[in-house]
Amino acid sequence: MDKLIQSESSDSQRASYTTQDGRSFVGYLQFGEARLNDYKAATGTEFTQDEFINDSELQSRVAAWHIASIDDAIDGMGEPAQRFNRDGLRAAAHLGGITGMKRFVLSDGQYNPSDELGTSLQHYYDRFSEGLGLT
Image 1 (cartoon, rainbow, N blue to C red):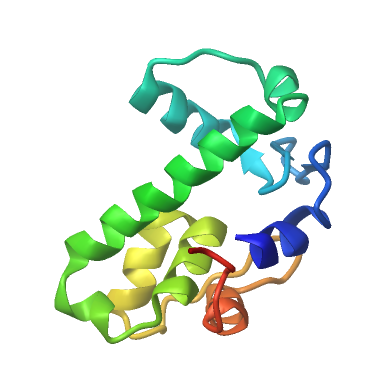
Image 2 (tube, one colour):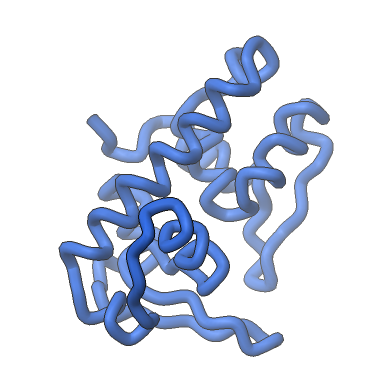
């Protein structure tokens, strides 16, 4: 996960980015409120974005859950996802959400939106297909 953390936040626990539409993404992996809410719902925990950004252990727990959740989605796709590199799909899901990653897979990469910084799912897939540094 080190390579993804470096890309997302330059390894800064307190990194923060606000999009043009006002959404904030924070921490090592630049999680937004929606994904943090997914974690809270799945685990029954409560915290604010400020608490999250100041708690490296919480960030690590959320990151591990996040990757496991993506892995569950990849495994649930069966054969179509097996034609792709797992780390690349993890990165695509991190950038574009699990639904976006699934659309990317099912379209053989034809579904390829970019974020407001110009980073596409294909770019992240290619960049991280060599591995995220996960064990």
